[in-house]
Length: 211
Image (cartoon, rainbow, N blue to C red; front, top):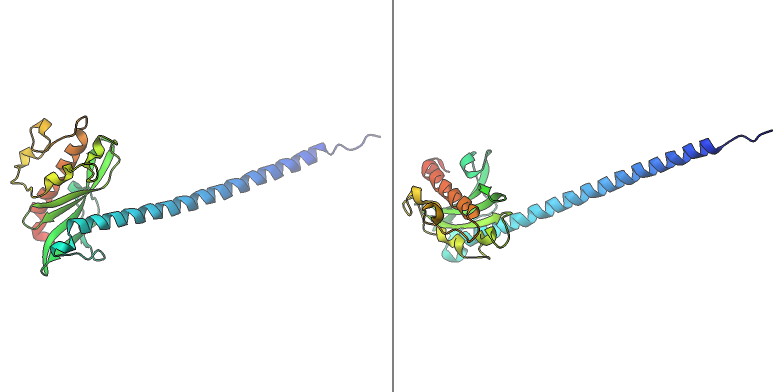
């Protein structure tokens, strides 16, 4: 009399256990990845917020009499020309109790490798107080010269306005403008120059509506 073959039930049980183990492993791994991404995203956002705060205080230095409350931004309506399709926060700096600087976050969408995020400080007379780069992905050794720590090029905007130079000259010298380009990199500085120009035009048009 032959013995019953228990191989199939054992094999089925083993497969079910293996499948369950793989599912549990996938769930645990996915959960760990999600938590890591969340923690990383929060850390990146916090680091960028701190970096932006430092730049705000650098453009409106307290030692020069500016007063800037980082916790009280002003909310401005959407401004696509500045890269904002929804309402966005900006800051006003005061001097002797009076508004003195408008600090605008501006996005240049036409960098060599994507968006270039800027902080543009404008005096209320329409002159540029200063410009700083918040974030970019431009080519190291070429386009990254827009960073203050890599070159002093970004300081070339200080004191400029739509009268200095005239709007048609708000581009790089290679295109007949006033601003230097970098050796081997024209797109990046041109994108920044044009973004600052758009900021000045926007301010000229909107300053009467600002809070």
